[in-house]
Length: 317
Image (cartoon, rainbow, N blue to C red):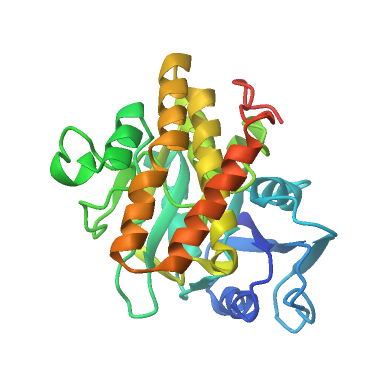
């Protein structure tokens, strides 16, 4: 029996990347599954990137938001009402190969993989170099090691969040796969109430993967299926905002999943200590623009402290 798939793409001013992504979906093989729909959720784009998309031979639905609701909220919006067996959350800066969809679904359908809830595939850049995109679940030690530069000198004691020491050349179970290509069983996604929408962007897939693991499901990285991932995407347009949202989501994740003393300590280090090495790197590179972006990002973060940063521990929205 053929399984079914819905694809959700969140778009925000991605220009021609979205069209290239949709063209690659249309060209991808649909062996062993039926593509029910491709939902593009446009988060208030101003560049016209969500216009004229009906040219592609895919079952397309376009949802338009007047403003940027955030990545997690838009993903949930796109998945609402899905009756498919699988949901694929796909970045618009990804281009699929012919087997990018059929191979992971076939893998997930194997009886031995019945408890694998989330699957990612190998992502390569425009030159074909493999992006080391899988990660471990964060710990306080990881955050402290990164902030103090200890991950470089004592990697066994202070491992990195991203699994950069592994070449991503073989299939293996992992804690978390990157959200650029995030295939999940729809029943699991709904059972976990989807993404936590208080993560505006960044760490929403880390949080969901962690909650899935606590519920007895695992994530898997499939190296024998590939896609091209440009990286950066729309966030390249607003680097200071990207830094702000990344740091804020990290703090939110800590308070949600760490013991409170650890969360408070790492959050204070993020707010007070981490800006210094970042500014030092900008100075070493003689990049005033990077220094200004860093200062702007941290100013936004410090200004957000009076607001409620911490999600509830139950994962509800």
